[in-house]
Length: 298
Image (cartoon, rainbow, N blue to C red; front, top):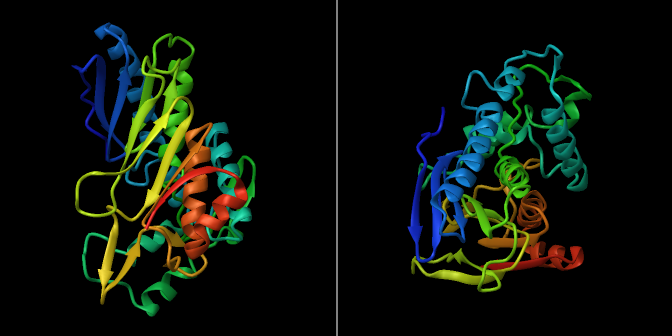
């Protein structure tokens, strides 16, 4: 599945806003400039990098690296340097979380159908899939990956944040204007701070008011948000979010509705926000222990 490759750039209250769709998310590049061509150039660079990463790592495409891995049927497969780096990063997260974060857990989506509002999986549904989850079952001897037949790899937990950082890296060298790259709510600044001194970023409310739950002033760096605002089910008065503990096959208990983290890079911010959600009721304690700047909505 390839995103729509249309790009739109228009003036918006003293800024130029470039928009496009990638990784099933609305994306934008906000530039403080009066130069429409400069704004278009930055947006095109960011969009093409987002689309490249989507083509390469999407589990929905039959020409992606992930598809090649997932259909290798237990045979060893050699992967490229970029894929190796993502696998190494995911392995580190797996080890840090004692297996709660696991890039083989995407197969649990077969049980968790967040497009069906009032249906949760049974214990048997989860148990039938957990045997096909677990990085410990995978042989990773860089650059050779050997995954047992029936298991799947999914970079969805880190892919969007990685794409933001890659896009920033490509445009930052020639960026003399203030810009903000935002892929579906995960974002990072480029160049100097805007004339106002900081970007104002609204965090989506966890209620139905439509108003921002928090308004953050970001001078430089990145923000990433994890939560259940859009992907959840509610059954018998209990809410189940989409961030699943790979060890149990179930969402962590009593997790916040939304956690936003500020960090130097989007991948760092996304890592902390996701790992905090996996802590459940201990989310804020975990973030305080790690010494990161965060905003939590319950």
